[in-house]
Length: 619
Image (cartoon, rainbow, N blue to C red; front, side, top):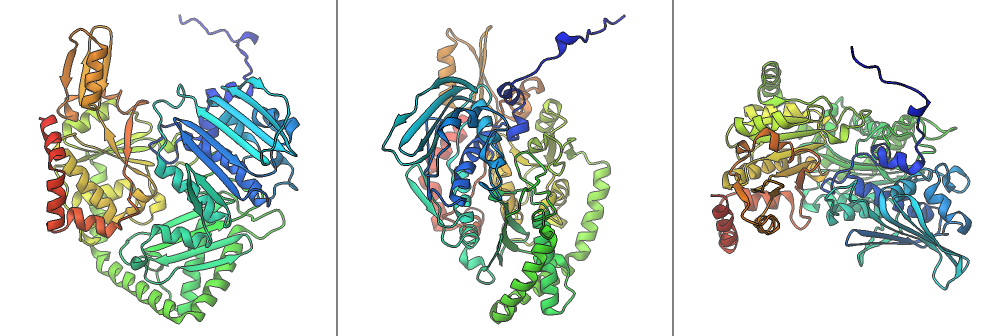
């Protein structure tokens, strides 16, 4: 008979604030990660501190914020009012303590009612806060949320404001590394949303004069715009939009009270509805909503009193009201667009004409594709009944209320042996596998028609659920898992081409990655080390003297499921696929995937030694 577990007073335990945060960090900062994804915890820590500095700017003090990252030490300095000196320790170490509870001091606040800096404090092995007010300085230091040094108030000539320095705890954020591109994007967004604010990051200055108009100009080439950006400003609302000549899908940047709501929410839904309704009325034609919004690139920012978000990291707005005595979010945004966009189109007939042509073109293309789409949908439905290409997981990005939805991952791999190893070793709750058959088609220069006619592309699109709407994306992370040889690299390139050609926003929003897998296993009787490069192999041999056993992995299929679990679990290494702002998508695809040119030949010759080294290493 099974022994019953005793449940007594001894089983009841109360965690203090820092223990609770360290034991359940996901409740406060979403997923942990290692810095390879823009929503990883180390970036949320930075954001939580900067949010407080932004609130100071919004309240009219502190026009400059300085951010420095060096050797994992993050330092954020603002020139706002500074924390009241007698509350410096409490504000960063006592729950339910903060200025955001006083609605007079902070209206439509960005910060999280004082929880943010406590989470940063608890999840850092070093945390120092300094506040300067009225010529006096107060400082305190913590480790894992525990106060280790409280300095007396001293006189100072330093400018007023707050300075926070921290090092994220490596025992919680394993093997983490900050990626400059993600931090720059975050800081630029702060500037777009707060015109007049200057942020200096490691000596580089960011500033915006035109708000969301600048954001769109940063993200779409001028030559790719169907018409100049429409920029509309109102009380507590700002909108910018244009249409792309080359892009197929819709692309949105949405914000609430300065938060980048990457999952959209009620405000984005209202914006999309308002644009469609206004354009139907303006042109007096009952266009399909998808034709009006096809290829749209737009940004919306609103300010709401006491916003309600559907997740702790504030990625999706759930609020339906602008404030206690204000109209609904839907009504407010719809009315604003109806009045302002309609007026703009009447005053700018050239823009109205270009937009009409774009809508009519989308309508023609949709009708041409309608028959193919229906056949493709039927094929995808039939295939899903006995689809061996997709081994799905239980949690998807659309399950916003599931605490693990940010971990949802689709591995795209090639070959039965490789997909078999990943399938057997994956976490069935959050990790899915899509198996390619050989090398996919080079889709450069092809129309969307090929996505429906090509079985693999059609089934992949159906698996991701992005045919109708990018917001339906079912997985937060799309990971290319191919062998580290020439064929594997070619498959990666062909898949990246597919996403760039038809779904570039997946890359722009940081959803696409390449899986790093080890090239070598070096072990002795006591220890096993997996090595991802020749340098790591040499270091491992040095560490495991004398003469350890060395295995060279030639492909993913050679790695047993028992070992593979090490490479797609907590210690997973992912390389994000990022776009270089120096080149447009069209230029990138033309150079690498278009017809052979002297420029590309010269590029290959210059890099031939590197290519040969890779080939030789992978023999």
